[in-house]
Image (cartoon, rainbow, N blue to C red; front, side, top):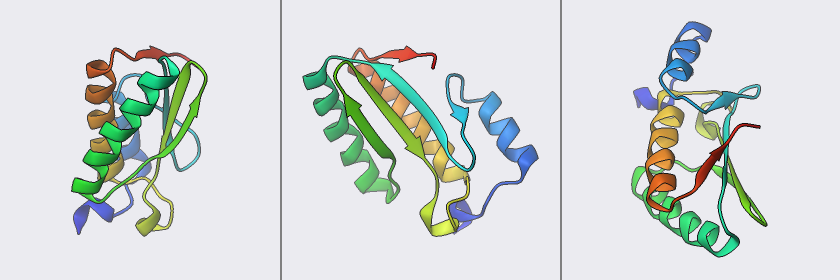
Length: 105
């Protein structure tokens, strides 16, 4: 599957330019949002439903008042792939639907 082919550094830079708010941390892209705790739980369920459908998932860290997503492709040796940026775009849409506010950390 072409979505699980690791991206080149140039492709990663281009994909990050099209994913405002997401930042690279090694071979992972991350983004955090401000959201009330119970809203974060609802958001996680929504994201998990989409992840199940696309067979790709993020690492999720929910804390009081904030939620963080970290995405990499485990099946590609923990490298960044097109699937990671697709999931990031989907998470942004879900976050907007749950009134989560992006954080710049």
